[in-house]
Structures are given as C-alpha cells and as structure tokens.
Image 1 (cartoon, rainbow, N blue to C red):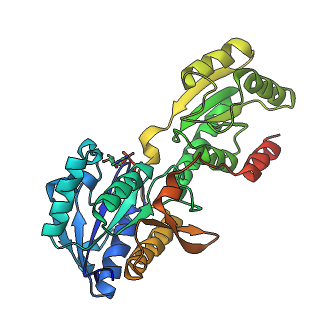
Image 2 (image 1 turned 180 degrees about the vertical axis):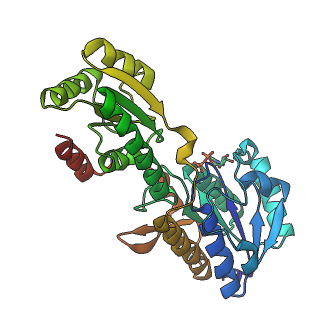
Length: 328
Ligand code: ADP
C-alpha cells in the first residue's frame, strides 16, 4: 500500500504566470483543511536542490489571490536535468519528511516531474501554469485568460492610433510553439489577420489578404503575430516585406513582450487556479501520482504527465473559421 501522505511540498517552476499565487494558496489551504502539513519550496527545482523550504499555513497565503507572479518565485534549473541534481532534490525531500509534491508550471516542469517521479517513485501532481495554453489534456492553463485580457487591452489602444493614421500594425504576442494567445486575442480585438505557428500563411498570402482588406474599404489593419510564427525570420522582416509590397500604408511593429506575463489575475484565472489547487490535494489523497490535474469540458480531470507533453499543440479549427469570417 502507498505511504499515507502527511506532508506536501509545493513549488512553481519555469515561466511564471498570473494565478500561480492563487493556485499555491488553494494548495496550502486544502492541506490545512485536510490536516496535512504544507511546505513551500522557493525557486522551483533550484530551491528543491538547495533545500530552500518554508513552512506554510493557511494564514501564510493571505492577500495573495489578487497578486500576479509567484511569491515562491520561479527559476529554470539546469542542474535538475541531471540525475545527480535530482538525487540532491530527493535527499532534501526525505530530510524534510515531505511525502508528495505539487508542481505548478509548464511542459518543462512536467518533464522534470516525470524524471523525479520515475527515478525515486515519488508521488507528484502537476498543475498547468503557463500563459501559453500549450498543455494537452486541459482546456486552459493558469494565466492564459489574464494574458488574453492584457493583450486585448493593449491592442484596443493600438487600434486607436492605427485607425487615425492609415497604418498597419503588426503586434507580436507570446507563444513560441502555440498560437492560442494570438488566435483568441486576435478574435477578441478584431484583428484583420492572425499569424500562428500551426498555420504557415506565407508572405504572399499575407500581403494579398491586406490588399483585399484595403479594397473592401478598411483604412487600417491590425495583424496579430504569434512569437513562433514562421512567415518571416522575425516580425521586423515581415513588416519590411509588407512595406515593400503594399502601397499607401505605413507599417509599425509592437512587441508586447513580458507585459503579457504580469498583472493581477482575472477572476476566471483565480477561480480556475483555486479549483486546481484543491483538486491537486484531492488527487494525492486518492493515491494518484504522475498526473496533471486540469479542466476538460468544465470537469476536473487527471491526465498522465506523458500525455500532456506528447505531440503538437492542437489549435481549435472552429476559432480559425470564426477569425476568418469576422475579419472580412
Ligand atoms: P516550463 O515549465 O514553463 O515549460 P522550463 O521548460 O524552463 O519551463 O522547465 C522548467 C524546469 O524544469 C527546467 O529549468 C528544468 O529544471 C526542468 N526540466 C525541464 N525539462 C526537463 C527534463 N527533460 N528533465 C528534467 N528536468 C527538466
């Protein structure tokens, strides 16, 4: 029989995202509810390797639900990629008498969890924390909704100036391998064209589409470009190509960058993170391990880590159709 869980460690790892604090809070309070001890691990796997731990109770996580980032801090740990690094980590877990871990992060964090779980048969539950929404098996990731709202707010402002000057604005949003942010924020902000890594539009089709817009009476255009899009080497090269092949417009580039990661989490992200934090402890108490807890069709689900990181990001083809039709 699996060892009874009395003490749970929680950490945030990889890129931070708004709502991670709400998730930690829910994990800590769920531990308190079930009379489990809870230990916060600073700086993700780096702090695990160094034994940088703090004891947490229900009051330690007050005034946090509304704060972006992660109070436990996050880090990228090259050492954890080595067996020696992970051995140091497990030694610290054993020394602190921690029986199970909740890790909040993206696919890299889950890969690390797979390695640790397999090598030392240690119970680990993952929560999807990334703005990119690029984790399979869950409809949303913690931080995605807030990032979308940030992007839409920024593009609304850009639209005002684009419209006043007959300009084409290229707006780069985050998403190295996943076009989810670009697609949803593009629809939400009324973008004329959306470029995503899952669909290579090509430069000529892009220019043809902008020409069609002009012919149909549009005096400005917003093009939302996902970071990982492959139409050009980078967004500035795409801008130059448009400028050289389309008359009558000035082309401007805005790279939104890290503003998309920050800010107070949206209510949707806070509720989502709270549900997942509570469900993580439920899953551990049911004896589950090596799974991510996510939400599919508004139901909490447990998905083996390996399934969350396998294959390509799946883009919603219905959303692509909506974007095509509404940008006419
Ligand atoms: P994210 O979780 O946001 O995708 P990273 O890709 O940086 O962020 O991963 C977070 C951390 O997880 C890395 O710094 C590393 O310590 C650990 N990690 C990532 N991939 C592996 C792997 N294949 N094996 C072991 N640890 C890994």
